[in-house]
Picture 1 (spheres, chains in turn red, yellow):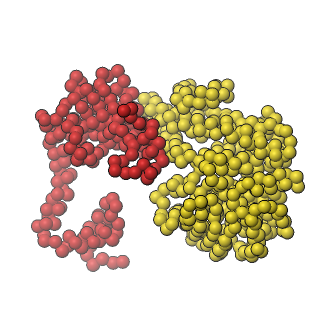
Picture 2 (cartoon, one colour; picture 1 turned 60 degrees about the vertical axis):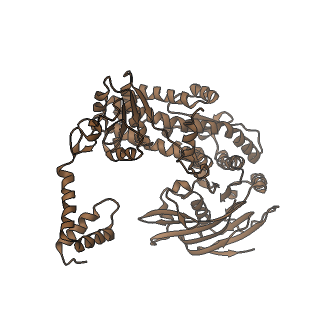
Picture 3 (tube, helix red, strand yellow; picture 1 turned 135 degrees about the horizontal axis):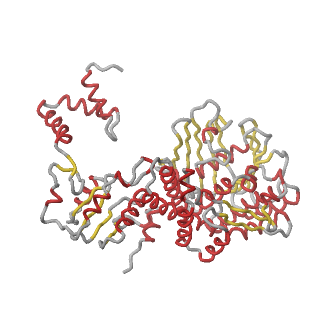
Length: 198
Length: 375
């Protein structure tokens, strides 16, 4: 096929590189933008440029931020005794959405994964251990329950051995509002293994 | 459980075929190379999304065709379902149950239990350890959904650990956690396999004796790469996964240097074996051709009985060219088993063979990928 505009073709190409966007969606997005007023499109392009120009990593928790340390780390209302450890910055958003947790975070930036060449030094684990000074009383590992997640949890637990800080891992089991009957066997088995005494 | 109808498109030498089966014995006759086994292979494919003939699914696609498309109607005591499997040369395979595509092929395993006995099974008895591991893994996966999941987790941990052993720099604290991960997932696999063999070997002996009409003894020993069999007999009594995990970890610590040298995981269920003993001697080393064949058949019939008991429904029994290998006496003994089986599929090149049975029976004859039902 042949495009009548090189700029349009370039934009479609760029869109289709994004996750979960195919060629057709990329075309629809590009033609949509073409119809929009110039100002609106400039707002979008500035927003795009800003994420690279303004956003960096917090030097304390390694979450994405525009100021260092980030607003979560500097907020005086947040509890300094607890650190919740997550894989990526979007996990922080997920936990913040529930509006229950008022402590600090620590973003590892991945999980142990030798197949992708990711070892302990590629994650912010050393930095986590450095944060475990007198203030911190508990570390909550909110890490996905898969093989890489399990290995990472074990690694951190091993490194925290001897440090007088409580360490816990979030529970895994049956989703709320779902039916036992429809739970897959693995989830149900893990939920049985992780049952709680009443 | 039974399969009532089967449709084949571009599967092996079938361009297009439709068949309906009876609930008892379905006996498929024909000369060699006409497509008898392919019918069993297709049924097995629908049950497990894999072949018992080959590891490469695409070899089942008809010559120069892009994909095969097979479908079967299954009936259990309470419901009817259709299962359709499509396998492309390039795009892989997908399974649809009642027209709904499964997200993961592993969801299929165990839904439609089946046991196949074919001449290739002699490899389980006399071939390399991988054959025995595959046999035991498929049997256990059909009975315990969690086993398959654990196995997949173990394989993931194994791949990760091998990648680490293969990397230029290996930090020992990093390898430590992958040791633990491997031991944690692997111990569950070993535990299940040992438990299975413990309750299974008696049944295998019983079936072997009946087919052979002899008083031979059959034993099965789980030979693990993580510890000698003396320690192993201790576990089977304690039956503790934690204990196995501990021994596994000790072996990994002990063998670490060798593994680093070889850049490979050398210990674990992926290296284990099952030693089959006939009259206390390894049948693989000392068995005659006849004993190997009888053992191969006995294992599958015992597996059938074991599964029927555990699952409280009778798996499909697929018997590929089983009778031709046996003398008349052994055939008669096998036939007795069929009386108590559920739905059975039999192939034979032996034309004109008739059965004396209480079950319903339907005869098919196949010629160059086409069927003639003989009533």
